[in-house]
Image 1 (cartoon, chains in turn red, purple):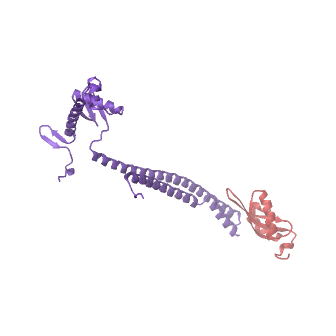
Image 2 (image 1 turned 90 degrees about the vertical axis):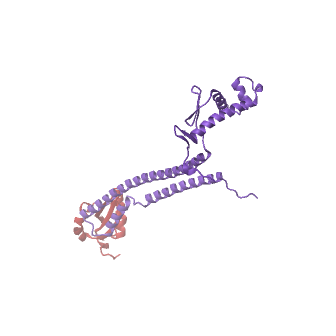
Image 3 (image 1 turned 30 degrees about the vertical axis):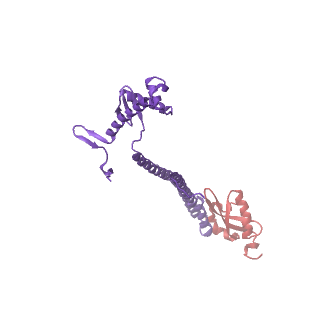
Length: 83
Length: 234
């Protein structure tokens, strides 16, 4: 369980890449993950949340705690904690 | 056991089959070409998939402007693939035209060869009557637009023969004489009809030979109306 450090953190976030087809639109975003803090869990949750909005999850880049939010806020832009 | 034989009509039939096979082969080749062309051209999604892979593989391409650029890249690729689709249709249409032209060319070539062969045959058989026009008022008969004047009696004989030919009938000498003199055929002499035929042949043959072979040039003399290359003396 201890692998990856942030598994026990109270707050867990993941940054991901997603797409929409026809025309191709790309998205890099940050989202909060509930429960276990792992890439697999993040993948499961994000697939559902993005799928509901018509987006397809491409991959989960990483999972991190609240300390990683600041450095990703600019890149994610409007997709920061959108889903 | 039958001998293996080959006749001219057999050859013509096999030639026709060869032409059909050839045309079919040309059409089949063009169809294969079209299929390969349509199959080989990249589809619209190829560009999007490539851009998507670049996006996944590079974790540094995450800022909004970079993502926007990647999207534009994909869009321009899609626009290009639209152009390719247009080209594909264009090439397809041209291919169809080319196929039609090729097949038409082959067909016309074959027709030309056949016509040449028939021409040579006609040249060998001498005169081929393609039109016979009997003009009773001028006492003239036009064979292939060559006019020959006949005596009234010969005219009568020719008209009777032409009428019989139109009804697909064959007439004996006494029948001909009967029709012309207005008596019944049983009362007529076979020799009288034969004489009429002989006179018709003499006048018509004489004029035809003078028109086609032995020409009379006014105030100069006589000359064979043929190419000098075709003359051979054994």
